Image (cartoon, rainbow, N blue to C red; front, side):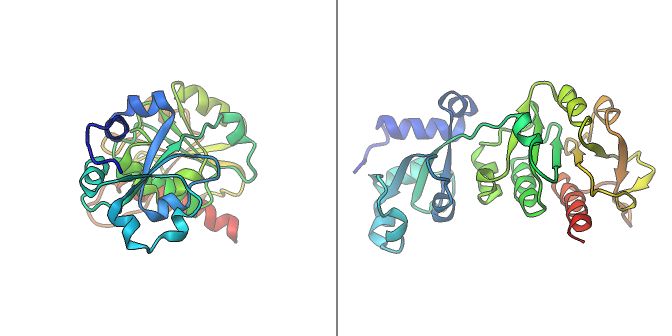
Length: 257
């Protein structure tokens, strides 16, 4: 059993929790809790750490069955956990790699394009909601928060394993390529029409901008159509994740019917 916080593996996990560079260099990310661990796709589990209390509980014998894992003391597990209430099980998972060609080969294309999303909770929620709404890919500008940030991972509730995604240095170039296949709709306050006035049954991409600034003007100019969400009261805009959810589910609603 690992009992020292100076153990090399423990030090590495602490680095992976806090440093995007470390996660990128090693090609891994961390997940915590029985649910997230149980949903890890075949072949992606690299390391598994279990607290002595978790093992002693006996509730998750099936989850641990036939798995190699490192047993750690409760004190050490609290050190490596990113949550205030550690759940006792943590995994190092291999990152998945997708390309634009892989994403554009999907059937019934329904993309979410994100520019400079900064809040980890927002990004994770968008991925989770996107899975529910049938999104076939999420493409992010390099200015977006790291998708493998532990707070993002928790917010995805497992969607990180199943929704294809791509970061790009050339966001404008990617949008231009996508426009050859999809109609691109941008959520924008200057739009003249509400989002529910359009037909999204053809290949569709929804463009969402930064939480405080929205889309850059040059990015919005690349869209085929600007759309907005009707609102009462004095509210000017919605939370980025909420706005994305409304638009993604409108696409799903039309296709479902």
